[in-house]
Image 1 (tube, rainbow, N blue to C red):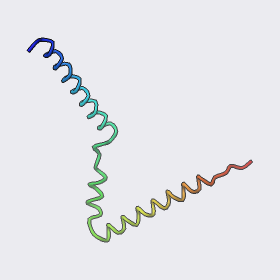
Image 2 (cartoon, helix red, strand yellow):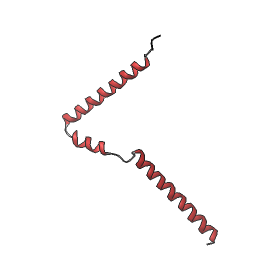
Image 3 (spheres, one colour):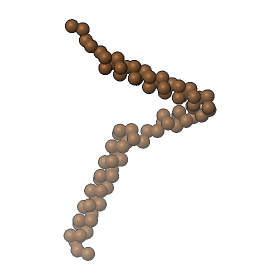
Image 4 (cartoon, rainbow, N blue to C red):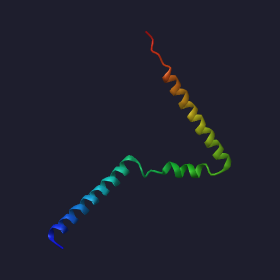
Length: 79
C-alpha cells in the first residue's frame, strides 16, 4: 500500500470517529438515553387497576391540552 492510501484511511477513520463521538455527546445532552420515567412508570403501574388509572389520567391530560388550545385559538384581545 502506498503512503497516500494509509493517510487517507487514517483521516477518514478519524473523521468518522469524531462524528460518532459528536453524535454520542449530542444524544447525551439532548436526553435521548433518559428512560427513567419509563422504568418508574412500569414499576408504579404494573397492575390492571393502575394501568386503567394511568390511561384515565393520560386522557384527562389530552383533553386539558385540547381545551387549552381551543381557548388560545378563540382568544381575541380587547380594544
